[in-house]
Amino acid sequence: MFTILLPLTRGPQLMEIAVKSVQRQTVSDFELFIICDGAPNNTVETAYRLAAMDHRIRVFVHDKGPRNGESYRDEALKIANGRYICHICDDDLWLSNHLEETEKFLDENDFGHTMRMVYRPGGKTIASLFDLSLDSQKAKLCKSNRGFFGLTNGVFRKSAYNKLAEGWSAAPISVPSDLHMWRKFIECPGLKIGTRFSITSLALETPYRLSWDIKSRAVEMAHCFQLIQDPARLDQLIQNALRAGIAELLDADPNEFLPSTDKAHENGRGRLPDARLLHRIANFDGQRYLRLNPDVAHARVNPFEHFIRHGLREGRPF
Image (tube, rainbow, N blue to C red):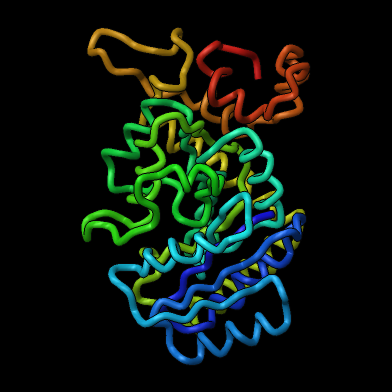
């Protein structure tokens, strides 16, 4: 069973759509905790209305707490029934596979994340590619104030949470609250940490929409909710997001992912991949990769995950 936390501080216009994306999961065994952190009365009323229509929803109403009301999340988890813990922001959408993919991941891991695609105004998408199983990526998460996968894609076992010296708590003002929480898992010895290489959410990030009013955001979010219910349009969003994410990743640090034959030279910096290579990567075909690499197919692993982690470095055909 899953416990899902949905923290709220503002009006209900976006929250209703986010909840709908939770309710259409392929896995239905969950409880959804709507945590009102000083949220206005119409949000509280809407949350109770949703709970009256779905017994899996519980509502927790609080006065505004310190920072983002993180301590209320800790209180909720003390009474949570779920073995696995997930979160969703009110301005994000889960794809219908989120809990299914999370279950596969948490069956073997204590903490980590699935992948998200960010939806930019105008319709462009980009995938956030980050591998938390790598020590270098853990270190990056601890040093940077960029969260990389956000609250909506962070997942953990409740048993792992109970091992922490401190759970959800108000973060320092300079650190995102989710990042402050994730660092506690990374610093806790003995936990198995990683990444599930499957896109399971659509993020409509606030920084790209600072000048938008809530009605405009709700209209966009409702449109996106329709998009992700159309298999063909969702597939196109995901393919575009992966292409953009791979291109950004290679441009930022080609040495980390390119095979040694593509690393250069006298100035000690790797050259960027040429246009032909980048085009082939952007049009990566998982089934073709498995046909060309029968050992990978035999291992029954995710072809894209293997390609990013190993295939490029090893110079495998794709």
